[in-house]
Figure 1 (cartoon, rainbow over the protein chains, first blue to last red):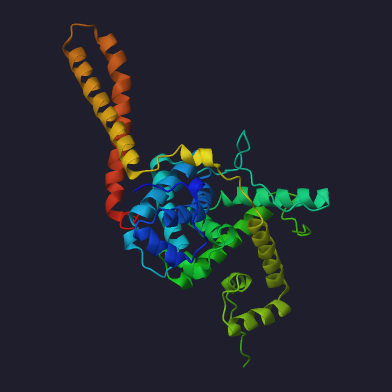
Figure 2 (figure 1 turned 45 degrees about the vertical axis):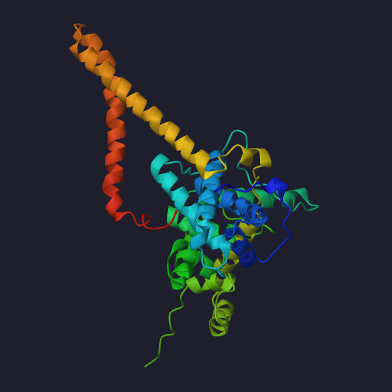
Length: 206
Length: 146
């Protein structure tokens, strides 16, 4: 099955379950809309797990292909995003196992392609700089965490999934999510504090 | 005999931060934060970290970059089949060449110079395949839909 071309989108914003039903029946506009809605989150998760833009694009596109191929198995009424992200996660893990591509410091790139770009630019350059610095340090520290802690932090804090959705993506009980997430956050906090005299900038306004 | 206060589960701080606790649990955390400065400090740090993460934006690929990827299961299959045929050709050609090298009257050093690197590549490939086969029975993700 083909991945729809978002550039020819004509479908109006519709309820997700309705879109899925239409896509199942072969409606091209519904497929377009689903692809448009979910290809960037898929890419972002792949990038956040792999730290490499090209690999992330490959994984995201491949996951979308699988998503549309397996759409008939999807249970109506459930949110699409966790299901797609679980496919992305499994594809990314596969790639990590095959190529050992996971970088410890995904932000370090000559072209700066993977540097996070801020959208909130305040009036105070000093505060802007401090914000950006904290975000970059946080992202670098995230790359040093074990894979299972990194992925749960990405799903919660960067992808904004609820605990129930994270449980679905990781295939673990909801009760496990909170404890695992807290371990990851505590580990990240320790890493930030260990960063030398600058430490974790307690006074940084975000 | 005095009673010790019940131990506070620190992971509740994350649940509270994410708004995932029940009303009773939230109340318990609120009270704990008022009385324990260390817990308050941890909570404030976690809160700052979460805010920083949520405010982080990444450069996204443009349409051209998406367009360069295979868009059909057919084209992906063709690409995979292409790589497979190329691999088969490489193995067959290398095997054929090595056989002729082995039976040729050339000197031992020349044979070793050609044979050693090719054997090295074959062994590296073989070790990867063996690792994959060994981890297959215990692979926790193998039954997960990909």
